Length: 183
Image 1 (cartoon, rainbow, N blue to C red):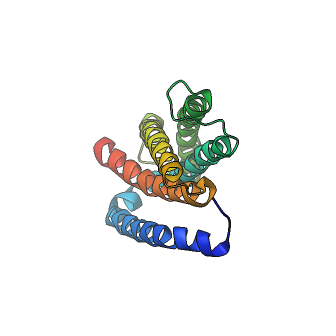
Image 2: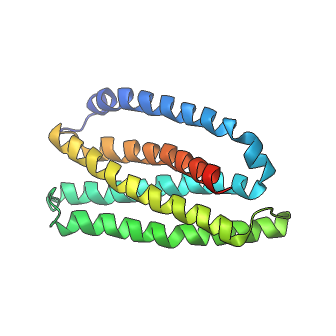
């Protein structure tokens, strides 16, 4: 793995072009839910928070796996503490933070406007979305890190941007699907 602007650009430009296209398509999917989101303003508040939290979870796990990889501590085995420990801690963080996001969103919505959704419904939507996002984050971070390892790419250049963008996109998709089935 050599570091140069040329090698990073050569590696990342096609990846970022694909990820940008994916982000744009998810924006179009999000706009198709516009009437539902405007009817339930609480859900509209959840969209940027969910996207941000999903991307943050992805970048945290990716950075931790990349660091372990650079330190020579990461082995792609289920018995490797640095692999399973980081994945489990990311899932625990997700399971902890998403219900709190639901409560905070409902509380803010109650102060700003009269919410049409109850606390239980908002917390259920955020918690279920968070669990699904954390599972996806673990799978994508693991696969992307392993692919970077196989292709002898620097995981700092490839894994973190890829996983963060994919988690953003999947976060939107999961939230909208959860809303579709629970509202």
